[in-house]
Length: 115
Length: 443
Image 1 (tube, each protein chain N blue to C red):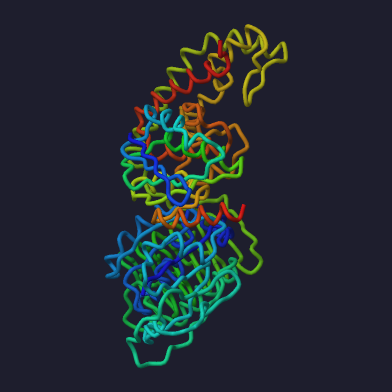
Image 2: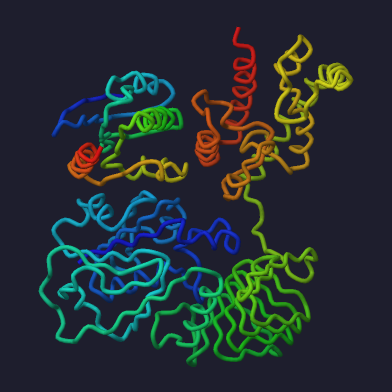
């Protein structure tokens, strides 16, 4: 798994690439932008090939912590395989999901201004 | 022009009891899934790219609709958040919508259209947003106007909310009476008002009174009277001498002999009065029953593997159970569910061996429970309604450390219910047993 971090309009974009499973989920949990509960981020999932329940747990846990401290985690560019995991587990209701990262950044900016 | 079809689970809560496990967009209206009416309308309006959005699972509908090639369109799927309004839907699907005119069909509503009319004028109409609305749904247009493809004036478009069983039944009956003159309805019919599906056997002495719609794989036995105004779903058997009038028989239902069903919805062994909403679950399978497909080889294999694992556990744990159960019971420390308190040595040993689950193991041998699946001993009734949930002795959630809350546990259970294999389940059962020791005795 490769994690790339970018900044756009003051919003952190975390690009996930490869596979997130039980062996790589801890690395994801430790990543600074993801683990920082006060930072609103957009996770770009376009190049994520596989996600299992451990990876899902890492994402959901981080999202919960961010939500508790008033920040957000938005998801973008979910491919069909990854969307299916969110779909069958019923976790789509927990996230704001965008088909374009730029739209997610706009939304995150709006959220930040309104807070 | 493009179309977004958005439906939220909250709009269709009433469907859960009547059609458990069915995606609201696949609810049958006159033997045709609801979503197909919406797709038909979008095609009549000139759309060739449609995206289906829901805050609930879409896998069933993806399986049914595929990529849309059967309608000659491109069909994609995405998810929405329960709080999303139309501006958010457009924003979240910006890449799909692009710079084109977009029609949003939202809510659990039925569109009163006519297949013989031309709705392509919607792309060029300057309506200022909503063109039709009703409680619980609307048709909205957004994006730049497109050049008109038709000289015809735009026909009126009406919306009827499908907010409860009564309205669902009324719309289904209206569709049946209107028939194929207005909507594209499934089935073959030599004359108007009667459509019959594939593999239907009708006895010579049975009577069909129009209007009637009969699905696929239906058997109508001697002396049965179908209609007027009867909608018979697929995989249905109507036994000898029964009468079905002004009623809907949903898929996979058996109607026993000499029954008269009038103004009701029958779904498996349940009879529903759409007016009052009163339901009656028949216990006698000779009167009304569900027709289930045979167990698949994988289901059977899973049951065998689980039963063998349960038998082994029963054998291995029989001695500790025989010693500790009477001891703890006498001391008043035994609790059947959810766990044995971790107070003394005996309690710790019982807990480490997961003896609290021991009394559930015979349930696996009888096929009532799985060895691992969804937890049965906790109050999570809402999570046990899906077809992918298997009540079990151990939970998939016990194999993973992150599932701290009830909703997390439900997520893990759903994930593994679809991804696990019978042999993988054994590994996960061992993992659950180890985790239970680990979490109760961290030292």
